[in-house]
Image (cartoon, rainbow, N blue to C red):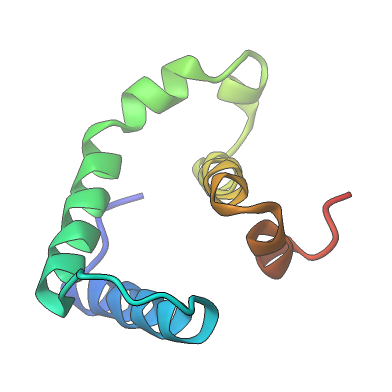
Length: 95
């Protein structure tokens, strides 16, 4: 999968801002421009580290899973690191 287009990066940025506004009571000192830069840097990091992530996956998953499936596993684990309730919002029941 290629890096996101600028339009899609803006969608991610707006989505994160909306999520933070709706889900978190605390305010942060993160400014909109800083968050946008973080979205851009994250997308670039993912692009630059795909091979490393793929190498870390066990066989036969590494060779049999599609790029989309591998990315979904990455997203699920990342979401769980936020919190299990957040993972449930993405995937439904996970217990």
